[in-house]
Each structure stands twice: as C-alpha cells, then as structure tokens.
Length: 169
Length: 424
Ligand SMILES: Cc1cc2nc3c(=O)[nH]c(=O)nc-3n(C[C@H](O)[C@H](O)[C@H](O)COP(=O)(O)O)c2cc1C
Ligand code: SF4
Ligand code: FES
Image (cartoon, rainbow over all chains, first blue to last red; front, top):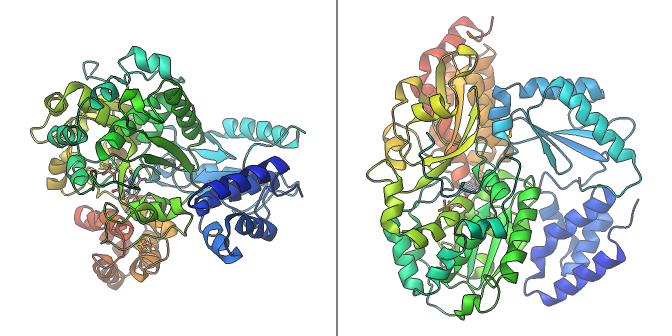
C-alpha cells in the first residue's frame, strides 16, 4: 500500500489545520487525499485524519461512512459508478448496468479478478442530458452504447496499468 | 426561439469554458462595480424588487430570504452557495459552471456585499470536479483583478470565497445538512428553528442560495429590477431560467429560456418532440421530487405559481419526459428507490417508510399486489406526509401521490391482471 499521505501533503494539512479556526472542515479533503493515494481509506487513514484534526477516530468514522464516494474497504483501481436514476433508466441505464456486469464478469459491488474495476450503482450524475451515463474515477461518460463502453473500458484499463500517477478514484 | 435573451448562458460555447477575459468582454463584473457604489441595503432592496425566486427547488423569494439575515450586524457570518445538485433530472448548475464560472463568482461577490459576509463557500458535489476546478481558476483570476479579496474595487469591502468538495449523498443539498457537511460533521439535517439566518455555519448567521440564484444577482444589479421582471413571460414571474431536458425526447439540451415558457415549447421546439415518433404520456416538470404532469397540461407556463396550480411543482426546471410505452408504476418505483437509498436515516418515516413504499410498488409492478396492498400504499403516504424531519421524504411522496391521482387505472390494472399491462 502507498503512504496514506505524502510528506508534503502531511505538512500542508498540519499547517492548514493549525491555522484554521475550524480544522474539522478539512475532514473530507483529508479522507479524499488518503483515498487518492491508497485507493480506499484504511483504519490507519481514519486515525491519521483524526490525529491531524484533533478528532477521535469515531468522529472521523461517522463522516467517512456517511458518504458513498468514500471507500472504507478495498476497491479496484478504477471504480465504475453507473447511474441508475430516472433519466438514465428511461434511456437504457439498466441495459448498461447489465452489460457492464456481463463484460466484467462481476456483480454490483464486485471487483474484477485483476483488481482493476469495481462496479457500483450511483444516483444521478448530473449528466441527464447525455443519458445513460457512468462515472469512472472522476470522469463522467455519457451517451453510452456497448461500443462506447468497450472503448472506455479499454482506455481506463490501460491507464490503470500504466506507471503514471493515478487519477483520483 | 433564438430571440430569447441569454443572460446566464450568453458566453456558452460547446465544449468550452469562458474565463475572465471573455467574461469581461461581455460586460462581466459591471454588476459588481455598480453594486459596491450602492449601499448594501440598496442592493438587497433591488434584488427584492426584482422578484427573483430561489432556483434550488423550493422557489423561496431571494430578497425576502435576505431580509431575515442580520446583514448590518458586525462579526462572523457566511454566504453559502449550494452546488450539490443531486436531484435526478437536474443538471443546470453543472452546465453553467462548465460554461462560465465567473457568472457564479460575480453573483456571489455581489450577494456577499449585500449581506456583508466576509467569507463565502461554494459546496460542490463529488461528480462535478471540472466545475470545482473551473471555480478555483475563476476565483484566482478574480483575485488577481481585484474583484475578490481585500478592499474589493476600492470599496473597503473584503470577501474570500472557498470551494468545498463533497463526497456524495443527495441529502447534502438540504441546506442544514449541507451546513453540517461543511463543518465536517455527519450530514444529517438540523432542526429548524433556529434557521440558518440566525444560527447557521459554525453557529453564525448564514444564507444558503443555489448556484443559479446567485448567478442572477449581478445581472439584476447591472440592469435593474424592472428589466429582470420583464424577462419573464408571466405576470408574476421574473427572469429567465435554465431548463434541462431529459428522457424520451429527440434532443435533450440544457437551455436558457424565460420563466413562463410553456412545457409544449420546451418539449416541441427545444426537445425536438417525443422520440421514435411516439406520444408523450407524462413528465416530471422540475426534477425527481415534483409530481407528474400529463400530456393534457402542455400549455401550462413554466412558473412557480402556474405549475403549482396544475398540481405539481416548478422545482429545479429539469424536465424529464416519458413516452406512451412507459409503465408509470415502474418509473415511480425507480424514483422512490432513489429517495429510499439517499435517505440519511435520521427519522423513521423516511428511513423505514420509503423502503416499504418501494417494496409495495415492486409488488404492484410484478403483479403480486392485492387491493389491500394498494390501500397500504395510501396509508404509508399518509404516514410519511408531514411527519418526516426534513423535506427529502416529502419530496419522495410527490411522484407517488401523482401516480395514484393521474394513473390510478394503470396501477389497478397491474393488480387486476396480475402483471404489468405495458409489458408483453
Ligand atoms: C433533500 C434535499 C436536497 C436538496 N438539494 C439541493 C441542491 O442540490 N441544490 C440546491 O440549490 N438546493 C437544494 N435543496 C434546497 C435547499 O435546501 C435550499 O432550499 C436551497 O439551496 C436554497 O437556495 P435558493 O433559495 O437559492 O433556491 C434541497 C432540499 C432538500 C430537502
Ligand atoms: S426525512 Fe429522510 S433525509 Fe430527511 S432527516 Fe428524515 S431520514 Fe433524513
Ligand atoms: S439520471 Fe443519470 S445522470 Fe441524471
């Protein structure tokens, strides 16, 4: 596993926390930074965030577990969030979700054997005009068809395997 | 169609973002220049006269909301912009921030001046990373140009704007849950009163407004309250509105058109009509929490009062259209599943009631329900109505109530035939 935070990040968060009247407001930023480095937020990450912000681990945990985009268990390198809300539903969202399950050979919540993709549902992505839509990492993809999904998956797989720094997700 | 004045979308070009130079070429920051020469009270009064109503879903008059705020009181107080935008069918704030982020920054600065808040936050949902980046760049540009920071345009007024990135959950858009989220607390709603204007962010007076609401403010100051009222086609309405089309249409753009445009114009002219040559069966006029409207109501003007008279709500202006092949029970089930999953879990009618409603709707859709189940569904709606801690559960009830009111025969048909009548 990568370091929870880089030296620079740690320094920066500590400085900001010391300067801010309400350091607690940094908790999401911190959890997201840790998740960006590790792929998810392990217990040590919750403890570290608490230590930086002067909170108990449970005070961090009650925030971390509230959000569906913070992962408290390991996920693949790329999390695919498929929109299952009404506009996507009206334009074939269920078929997109089904196709992804078939193509990746996993059920919702599952991770591919090579550890690259995790598949999850999400509510509306704000791409209702380009329905059906999904988000991988922080990139939203709309107007999905089988062909487009194949291309996107190939691209994302390649990016996930490349040695370059990962994008958040 | 093209003669609609473009106020918020005037700099919008496909695939591009307008930053400071372009924004200023089209008159950007003239509203702020004018505002800081007025007194804060004059700015508030102008916004009140303009008739601007909140674009975040509830339609509360913005100027009136601002009168509850202790603008003249010294000390810590906050302006918060709600950019959570997670209600299915709603994507207008995203389009605005992708196209022209300075629209919001200038609007926030004028609002901050009117309310005399030295600190403002923009709360941005997880999925809108590009919007967050656009805003950060716009803030940096505005600071460089002297529009933001200390002594704005030599007026002595100071204001900082911070971008807060969220991590999911629809409830964060409810204004008091949003305040908890901003503070780094679990994002359950707070009880009201005290209202945020009295005790809001970090316990201090706070005003929460939607992205589109705030983006209108500088235009009102630049061009006047009468001009703004004149933009609308209805007598009582004011301004333009960003409408996001979705569902079974040939085209699904987001566009700016007057308040008071009819559903028919939106659907026929801007949406290119219902797809695949079909007929329209129903639509959600303003997001997932607004009751359905039917094809017989296409000439209703899109405004708060007129849509309410027609049995629904104007909401956010996100119009989702359903064609004649749509099973309304199934559509409603999808909507309710969203609310059930996004329930924050704080109160029982919502946490337990909504999943039960989903179960009942599924029983009906799959042909397993009895007439007793239908009665149970009605009872459940009554149990949830008026008893939930915040408006999320009330929003969930809207579409279901309209399903029973407008499509009661279709619902009963499911029960009588023991299957969905729209599926072969
Ligand atoms: C469950 C729920 C979700 C909401 N989500 C949003 C949202 O994403 N954006 C928004 O502006 N208002 C949202 N609202 C409305 C806000 O509580 C608040 O009324 C609004 O931000 C006020 O701004 P306005 O007066 O400018 O419309 C939501 C309300 C509820 C009950
Ligand atoms: S109505 Fe739902 S979202 Fe609102 S407080 Fe109750 S459980 Fe939470
Ligand atoms: S409903 Fe899928 S992006 Fe809005």
